[in-house]
Image (cartoon, rainbow, N blue to C red; front, side):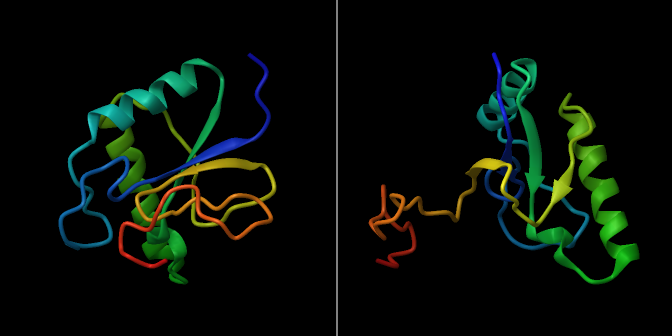
Length: 119
Protein backbone atom coordinates (compact mmCIF):
# COMPACT_ATOMS: atom_id res chain seq x y z
CA UNK A 1 0.00 0.00 0.00
CA UNK A 2 1.46 3.35 -1.01
CA UNK A 3 0.94 5.92 1.72
CA UNK A 4 2.22 9.46 1.72
CA UNK A 5 2.39 11.46 4.92
CA UNK A 6 2.11 10.62 8.59
CA UNK A 7 -0.56 10.06 11.21
CA UNK A 8 -0.29 11.89 14.52
CA UNK A 9 -1.40 9.99 17.60
CA UNK A 10 -1.95 11.88 20.83
CA UNK A 11 -0.37 10.28 23.89
CA UNK A 12 -2.49 11.18 26.93
CA UNK A 13 -6.07 10.00 26.74
CA UNK A 14 -5.64 8.42 23.29
CA UNK A 15 -2.68 6.01 23.33
CA UNK A 16 -2.19 6.01 27.11
CA UNK A 17 -4.76 6.28 29.88
CA UNK A 18 -4.89 9.74 31.47
CA UNK A 19 -6.54 10.27 34.85
CA UNK A 20 -4.76 13.29 36.26
CA UNK A 21 -1.39 14.98 35.84
CA UNK A 22 1.38 13.20 37.74
CA UNK A 23 4.43 14.66 36.03
CA UNK A 24 6.03 15.15 32.63
CA UNK A 25 7.66 11.71 32.47
CA UNK A 26 4.79 9.70 33.98
CA UNK A 27 2.75 7.92 31.32
CA UNK A 28 -0.43 6.00 32.08
CA UNK A 29 -1.38 2.46 31.17
CA UNK A 30 -1.69 1.64 27.48
CA UNK A 31 -5.06 1.75 25.77
CA UNK A 32 -4.99 -1.66 24.02
CA UNK A 33 -7.30 -0.84 21.12
CA UNK A 34 -5.21 2.18 20.13
CA UNK A 35 -1.88 0.40 20.65
CA UNK A 36 -3.04 -2.38 18.32
CA UNK A 37 -4.24 0.16 15.75
CA UNK A 38 -0.83 1.87 15.76
CA UNK A 39 0.92 -1.49 15.40
CA UNK A 40 -1.29 -2.30 12.40
CA UNK A 41 -0.55 1.04 10.76
CA UNK A 42 3.18 0.46 11.21
CA UNK A 43 2.91 -3.05 9.72
CA UNK A 44 1.11 -1.46 6.75
CA UNK A 45 4.03 0.92 6.24
CA UNK A 46 2.30 4.03 7.56
CA UNK A 47 4.46 6.53 9.41
CA UNK A 48 3.10 7.28 12.88
CA UNK A 49 4.31 10.06 15.15
CA UNK A 50 3.45 10.65 18.78
CA UNK A 51 1.77 14.05 18.97
CA UNK A 52 1.90 15.50 22.47
CA UNK A 53 1.98 18.88 24.16
CA UNK A 54 4.42 17.38 26.68
CA UNK A 55 7.31 18.23 24.36
CA UNK A 56 6.27 21.86 23.92
CA UNK A 57 8.49 22.89 26.84
CA UNK A 58 11.27 25.36 26.05
CA UNK A 59 13.63 23.51 28.42
CA UNK A 60 15.81 21.28 26.20
CA UNK A 61 16.84 19.00 29.07
CA UNK A 62 13.26 18.49 30.21
CA UNK A 63 12.12 17.83 26.63
CA UNK A 64 14.88 15.22 26.19
CA UNK A 65 13.82 13.47 29.41
CA UNK A 66 10.20 13.42 28.26
CA UNK A 67 11.12 11.94 24.87
CA UNK A 68 13.21 9.25 26.59
CA UNK A 69 10.26 8.39 28.86
CA UNK A 70 7.93 8.17 25.86
CA UNK A 71 10.35 5.97 23.90
CA UNK A 72 10.77 3.68 26.93
CA UNK A 73 6.97 3.46 27.29
CA UNK A 74 6.57 2.68 23.57
CA UNK A 75 9.16 -0.11 23.83
CA UNK A 76 7.26 -1.59 26.80
CA UNK A 77 4.16 -1.76 24.58
CA UNK A 78 6.06 -3.50 21.78
CA UNK A 79 6.07 -0.38 19.62
CA UNK A 80 9.13 0.84 17.75
CA UNK A 81 10.95 4.13 18.10
CA UNK A 82 8.52 6.78 16.83
CA UNK A 83 9.15 10.46 16.32
CA UNK A 84 7.66 12.60 19.09
CA UNK A 85 6.40 16.06 18.22
CA UNK A 86 4.03 18.83 19.22
CA UNK A 87 3.97 20.35 15.76
CA UNK A 88 2.02 19.46 12.68
CA UNK A 89 3.24 20.07 9.17
CA UNK A 90 1.91 19.71 5.63
CA UNK A 91 2.72 15.97 5.60
CA UNK A 92 0.38 15.20 8.52
CA UNK A 93 -2.66 13.53 6.98
CA UNK A 94 -4.57 12.63 10.12
CA UNK A 95 -4.61 13.30 13.86
CA UNK A 96 -6.06 10.90 16.41
CA UNK A 97 -6.67 12.88 19.60
CA UNK A 98 -9.19 12.82 22.44
CA UNK A 99 -9.55 16.61 22.28
CA UNK A 100 -9.89 17.17 18.54
CA UNK A 101 -13.16 17.96 16.81
CA UNK A 102 -13.07 17.32 13.07
CA UNK A 103 -14.40 20.11 10.85
CA UNK A 104 -15.59 19.67 7.26
CA UNK A 105 -13.04 21.35 5.04
CA UNK A 106 -13.82 24.96 4.09
CA UNK A 107 -17.20 25.01 5.88
CA UNK A 108 -16.67 25.49 9.61
CA UNK A 109 -19.17 22.66 10.14
CA UNK A 110 -18.18 19.96 12.63
CA UNK A 111 -18.22 16.33 11.50
CA UNK A 112 -19.03 15.18 15.01
CA UNK A 113 -19.45 17.22 18.15
CA UNK A 114 -17.46 18.72 20.97
CA UNK A 115 -17.25 16.36 23.93
CA UNK A 116 -16.82 19.43 26.13
CA UNK A 117 -19.93 21.22 24.87
CA UNK A 118 -18.12 23.85 22.78
CA UNK A 119 -20.41 24.29 19.78
